Amino acid sequence: MKLGIDVSTYFEELAHGAKYFDGDKRVEPLDLFRANGVDYMRIRLWVNPNSDKGEPYLAGNCDLANFLKLAALAESKGYSIMLDIHYSDFWADPGKQFIPKAWASLTLDELVHKVYEYTKETLVTIAEHGIKLSYIQVGNEITNGMLWPLGKLVEQPDGSRTNYASLIRLLKSGIKACREITPKSAIILHLEKSYDQVIYNEYFTQMEQAGVDYDVIGYSYYPYWHGTFEQFYANVDFCKKFGKRQMVVELGYAFTVEDYIKHDHGGAHLVVSNENMDSLGFTQEYPISREGQKRFTERFLQLAEEHGIEGVYWWEPLWIPGEGICWASEAAMKYINEEGKSMRNEWANQCLFDYQGQKLPAFDAFRKK
Image 1 (cartoon, helix red, strand yellow):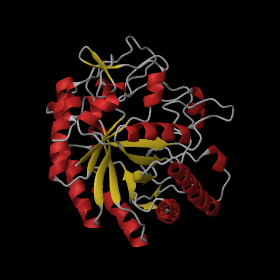
Image 2 (cartoon, rainbow, N blue to C red):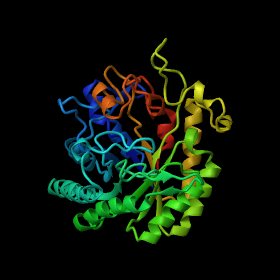
Image 3 (cartoon, rainbow, N blue to C red):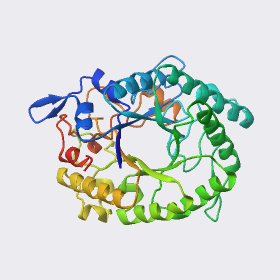
Image 4 (cartoon, rainbow, N blue to C red):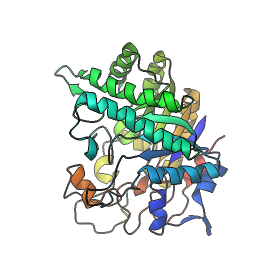
C-alpha cells in the first residue's frame, strides 16, 4: 500500500520560520517521511489565488508556480506526484466550489471548453518542467459537483440530486485533456461523505452509465464528519462493485483539543475542539490525544491494507501554527463570501508535529510495514 502526504502549504510554512524537530534534532520533515516509506506527495492547484489587486489568498497560495517548485523538490527526494486540480481560485470542497474569477461570465458550453483548455495547458507546462504525474484528481471533494452553479448537483425533496449531465460534461472535458497529455496518469474522482453508501451509489452509478473514464475512487476520511471505521470501510467494500481502485487521498485526526492561542475571545476555535467532539463516541477508543492519534493511525492503516486500499495520504501534516500562518487572507475571504470570519490556522491540531514543531508519536505510526 502506498503512503503519501499533502503538504501544499510547505513553502509558506518555511517562509514564516517553521522548524521541525525529532527530539533535540532539527529535521527536514520531507526526508523524515521518506525514511518512513512515504513516497507520494499530493499537491493542490488553484487557478489564480490572488485578488484583482494582487493580494495573495494564502494557505500556500497554491498556484502553478507553487506546484512546480514543490513537485520539483519532492521528486528530488524520491516522491511521486499526485496533482489535485481544484478548478477554483481557492479552496474547493463540498460546501463551496467557487468558479475562477476569470471564468465567471462563461456559459456551460464555454466552461466545458475552458476546463479542457486550462487542464491541457497546465499539464503541458508541467510536462515541460520534466515532472511526471502518477495521479491526477479532476476536481476536489466534488460530492456536490464542481464549478458552481453550472456544475452543481441540486438536491431534490427525496434526497436524490439532479444536474449530473452538466457535471459529467465538465469532468469528461478535464479527463480528455489528461488522457491526451499524460495518458499514463491515473485519474481520480474525489468525494467526501465517505460513510454514505446512498450518495456513493448514486454518484458512481451516474459516472458508470455516462461512461466517465476514470481509474480511482478517492475518499476523504475525517471521523468527526465521516463516521466510524466500520461505517467507512463498509462503504469501501460496497464501492468495490464499480471495479475501480480506491484511495484515501485525505486523512487526518487530532492530537489535542487545546488551542495554540490562549484566551481567544473571538469565538474562533480549532476545527476539532471540545465543542464539536462531545457527541463522538469514536473518541472513547481513540481519544483526542497524542497516544490516541497514534492508535487511530495504526488501526486505520491496518484496516486499509485488509480492505484493499491502494494508498493513504495524510492531509497537511506540517501545517503547524506560526505568526502569519493563515488558512485564508482577507482578500480570500471576500472571494468565498466569508468576510468577518477567523482567518487563522484552524488545522494545527491535525498535524503530525505539535505546535512547537516536535514530531508526534503518530508520525512513527504513519509508515510502511
